[in-house]
Image (cartoon, rainbow, N blue to C red):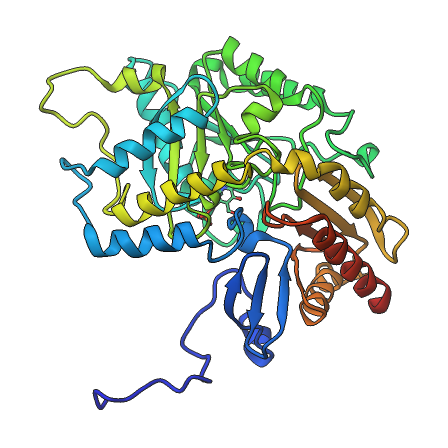
Length: 441
Ligand SMILES: Cc1ncc(COP(=O)(O)O)c(C=O)c1O
């Protein structure tokens, strides 16, 4: 191939797109070419109101100057530093800043590059923690039906979304699942549903089945996002905490979506008043600008590893880009932006307006359920007979054509706008979605 050969810009074949209907996309591409604050610009020059904060990650909106500048400056100063056996000051500073806003008791930070890596890291820490304490029969991991924990083998093993699991073999051995918490009697609930706390007691059943002394950890999303926005019933998370503590099982909250203000507190653990042993986060950590994930861990977990000869590595785990300087700079500037603009608590201020707007869609065609909390919401549509997911996908495409970005999981529309959204923009987002639902009927 001649060296000066340039790929034709309209040739879409080479890029195998993730979680995408590739053939459909390439026959009618939806391209974004720029972004600013609450909007994307599409390749045909339209302004698209971002109803999903990108992929639940741009919590401060797009191309925010502080973050853009910090990344630009960092690339020119210290572009990369080895992550193993070497350090750079920003990684330590950022860890302290994260501990400052994290729930009481989260005292240490392990860096990685994504939510999937954060999940696999937390699961590995859980296993190694028990082993470090001489409790090495605790190897079993418990997830939950309809849970999403990324796409690593650990994450899909504890995850509970069938299409993410069934194509990939036998997955990790020794994994079990709690039932999901989505009950029909909770339809059209505003905030946390009344029914379902008893579903946490299913953990007692798994303890009786497997023996507590074989179970290392339970991992759940405090609010399940990717499966279609499922709220934890009142009392459910507390009960899970009580049962895990009683049996010496670690509790991991996967806060890849709920971290950084989505529910109106820095983390969902604070919102629900339930503190786990570890928290995974990513996405909003850098406002989506640079890949970065992290695991927050209690002192008890961290300290269990700090034994043996001091020249030896305590945890045989890490990534080339763990805490890389550019990600750290982006994260620090993101935390500054959140603090300056009060974004980690803004969802609580907007929640009522968001809730009323969302529930105004209840009599629209095919709407079966609406649920909301903080600045997140879902509108569940009835499926077309024999074509599950078709109605949702059609609405998604029409919504994009109408100038709003939403997300669909099957026939569930999920929305999680940047936390800078104004009340007028909420009305515009939901008003446009309402028009699309009516026109598509
Ligand atoms: C709860 C949760 N965990 C893990 C992940 C995976 O994150 P990533 O796509 O950054 O690997 C996601 C992504 O949506 C998520 O919502």
